[in-house]
Length: 253
Image (cartoon, rainbow, N blue to C red; front, top):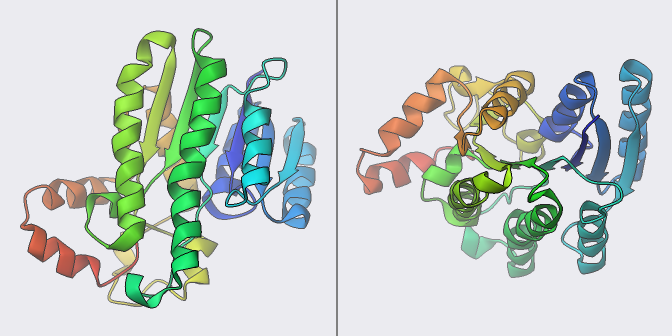
């Protein structure tokens, strides 16, 4: 059976990726900072689905931890067939008001970490096949501070890598949800109905992951879960940038 490594797996979309992949019979390597949360999730998945679950407690903004996870991915004796780059966090203030060290950590986690983990995965997957899923965001199609810039980079890099390594049997998919019912937005103090975000724009994690995995299986470079956000992204491509920038300030995608 295939083995999937998922970062940011202790909660939210990461935990949902773990559940849906375990349901399909995949063995798991789950990565996050909280050992206790990972151990609890691993116990639940083993009991419910009977799959093997390896736990790696790691902070991917720390060099040594990032190196350990990359080395696990690069282990040819225990190959990773599916890599899900999901770890992330948001910053609550405008760029100039945030601590610059927090901004650097944010950049490392959203750009450097997935790049290095993809590099490790491609070294093993090329020729034998594999899937890489990068959790990006609809924010990557907007102009809004470092979060949007990071997600825009991830979308662009995924598009390129999906075309570049298709001949090697590797697919790379950027999954771009909008607002999702997870702890990600809750930690930033953002809940349905706040900051002018209509309830209709909120998605369920289960649906986002299911559609993202389906698009990855089809070899699509970009997955935009739900028809409503497909329409939003299409509109973003034709509306004036000044208008979309003002719109982006109303919420944190």
